[in-house]
Length: 384
Image (tube, rainbow, N blue to C red; front, side, top):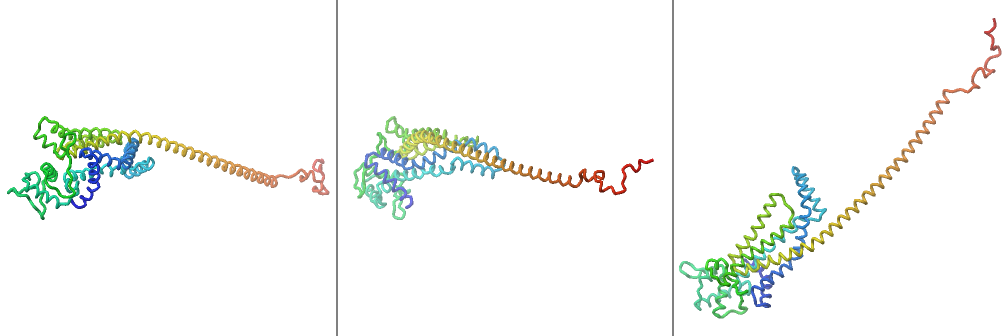
């Protein structure tokens, strides 16, 4: 592993060593290590879980939007973003934390596979010294170092090339034969429930015997796959409802992850399988607890948001009614003013018309003797 990879392993190795020193059991140390890692990640997992549950609750609205704007992707994205903001959903918040267990798994694999340099934290020179000590003691090095065609150990840049699990086998050989060890060395008890956690289950399948030491190791990958399947099944219940293609993909993942777990636990040391089982069991417990607590909390939050929306809606409606009433009052005032103006204009026009066309009786000739002339006789034309 690179220098960066080595230093990534350091805090995890320190934690495993702490629990090993407390319990003197490699298996218990791995289980406690898994528990602490789960507790450290719990706040982030809660955030991820809450986002997933919110996504699940708005899945119906999302599907409705997808149907409505199937031919307008830009509008669909706009409406989806509005929905996310209204419901407080961040679809990307859970992505990072869902992949975080894999780097931890890789780091733990390095710690298990290389106990001298990554668990005991001894330098590479200590490995070379132990190889020389074991060789001088007549230890069979075939499963410890890489051999060339002549049967000699392969050395590159002054470093003996070890087999895949060479450090594990070297530790076991040193402890079994009681060979001298460098400063900082401590014996490791790899037994857990009567099982050798350094054993690879697949190798036991090929040399199967009806003993608990063999059957127990073979059961580890089976339990790892089973626990992963139960966890995946439970997780799917809180996932957003997907369309046909998405549902098929999620269903396939529900079976692929357990199968992947079985494969990994079969071809790698049983210690890694113990970690995987503990990881799945603690995840199951966490999932059940978070489902119960977050569901109640989210229902309360949704009720509060609903009441807030209702109050806001009532407020807007009341404001609209007030504005409408004010508008009507203003319109009534304007109408009354117009009617008064029209009445005044009509009265003025009528008065002007009357003054222009009508006369008084005093203005008639018959009633104005002074306008008839001095020679006027009313019966002038009646004389015969």
